[in-house]
Image (tube, rainbow, N blue to C red; front, side):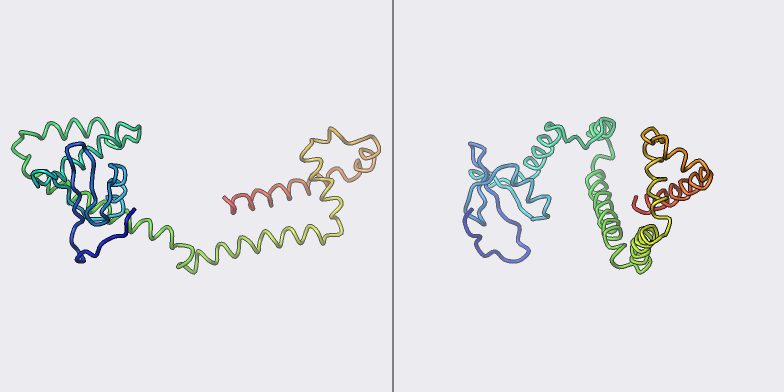
Length: 205
């Protein structure tokens, strides 16, 4: 794409539409597609589309075409009920008020959406409580892992976990005799480890 020309700040970009439906960006002196124009819209780039032959402003028609293409591509966003209600407003006595009402409603929606996204994205970075929660989660998990490794009963813990995973199906006769006297103790350890792991999983979720 050609290098952009200098435009006055705040001036909308002029897009010319020719009879062959090609769109010409006068700012970059290059042809663009309808998809590119849709991307410009998403990026809040102000533009006006004019008929290259007559100079008529056809921005509304082009934007409507973008919506039709988006809805036809499977990315449907407009509910059938809304479309029916919108169509019913044509010719209605309230039709003249609908454009300003819809515009104000969408402006408020986008404003609230932006504020909500900023609040969610910045919660952990800007909120001391959020940072503390993440730090405490990591410290708790590390403490549990270190305690298990350093414990004199680490071997028993591992055996208990192993039994917990395979239900004791792979244990041999000698191990059953060794654990028979400590059966109650191991079962208790298994329960405690399961409770700890459950707490860790909840913190990670």
